[in-house]
Amino acid sequence: GHKALNYGALVNGNGIICSHAAIRLLYRHFIHSLVYEAFNRWFMVCGDLVFNRCLDDLGIERVDLGEPFFADTGPDDWFKQDRQLNKNVGFHTKQVSDFYKLEDLAKQFTDIPATRNSYSNLRELGKPGGKGRNGPHYGFAWMINGVTKEPPEWVWALALEEHAFVIWGSWECSMDGIMARQIPQNKFRQVCLDGPNWAEGRKHLYESLKRWEADRGNMFFYAIHADQNGNFDFQNCSALGCGDAAIKPREGSSAVSYFHQLLLAEEPAVASPIKDAFPECQPSKMKVFSSILDDKVKAYHWSARDMFLPYLTDFSVSSFFAPGCLQNELIEASFVGFAVQYRMFRRLAPKSVIAHGFPSKIGNLIPCQPRRLPDRSFADSPVVSWLRPRLRRCASERL
Image (tube, rainbow, N blue to C red; front, side, top):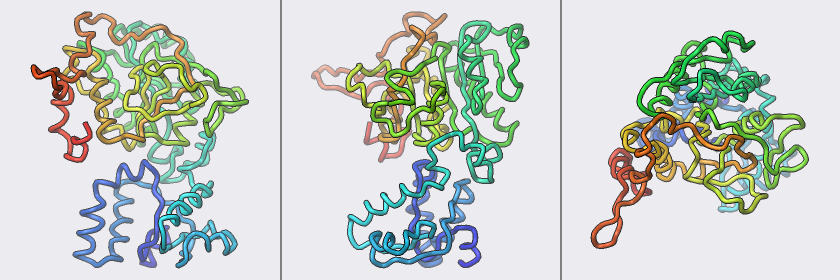
């Protein structure tokens, strides 16, 4: 136990504060591996050692706040003792209100990388286990599907953003214009798309992203699927004020860099800056949680993306809306409260290109809609009927 403590481990049942990303990786192991199995085989305190091993195996960063400080009287006394916020606090709560005080205390840990509010700090987070260039999760990878030989200008500009990496995929391939651009080779890649629909094309883009990660030796912090016409700009938001947003854009920053800043600070499982599905109500409300996110731009956190990607194509031959509907249903089943619609942006292009070249007959929502029965009741939609038996019961029951 003492040897483990030297690198920030848990001992004697100390409390631990986990980010959303850490919980998404850990939750499936908690009850069996970290509670029942550890207790039955090694007694309670050895569960802490199993927990630490699990953190190592899953690549979850630990932030060591120093030697333990044990408080038996709750969070109030922590503040009375010289605000020992640099300590690894072991606590015994006496009432529910202590948990709320603990939450307030956690918000003051401003030196923990997972809570920093500016992605400019990425340069400082390069240590092993961090989000920096040498850590396991660095950068924002944009996978953009299009139908033109060359990318539009906003894609070129995106490739020059400091922490952005671009994979451009098109059904009309050409290297002529790309070779003439002064884009660093480690920032931009092109693939030629094939397959009958946009979901197959995005599947191909995701495979290219994983090859890129294998080449560079670490994962991207966010993988972002985007449409050729998915460019966006600020709306009702600037460095002077941005509605009720907790984080404001820096002076002179682009809409894309601000989107990156929000993703780094808040780490939603999945998020979109495109808000076509929402009316212009409550203009000061800059963030809503929603199960319906627009596929024109959709960002996936590294800890959650394999639950969504690659796009499922089982229904794409009958409806090009269905792959997106499947993801919306997955959010409803397992990610309510972790899927974010940002509302401080506006689209610049008039429409999507995802249906380009495909028969108009597949532009329908039938696979996404509940089926009407003869007795006027409703049954699962084709998408939900397909998805429900493939989920665990707790998730299936939410559909």
